[in-house]
Length: 119
Image (tube, rainbow, N blue to C red):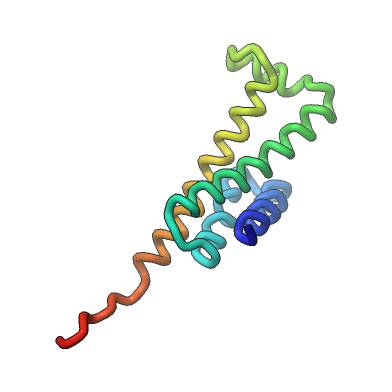
């Protein structure tokens, strides 16, 4: 739960000031620090980062009376601005999930190998 809150909060902050790809950085760092299993790392990163992006996208959607998301939906040919917001959640979630999983796998691969007993 702490990892989810940390990734969500810092992903939200990072995406306010830095380019879109910087969204991976908090998930990567907290994946190294707080997460222990692969499936857990991916889903915590996925949900926290995706939710942070989705909340920002919904805020922008209502702030400009859905003009931006409607035009993007029209350009993409998906029809509904809410589908664009769902795609935003999925893309942000995949980035966060892969970032957290990469951090965890880096931690696992950098652990020293234990010697077998009796050698």
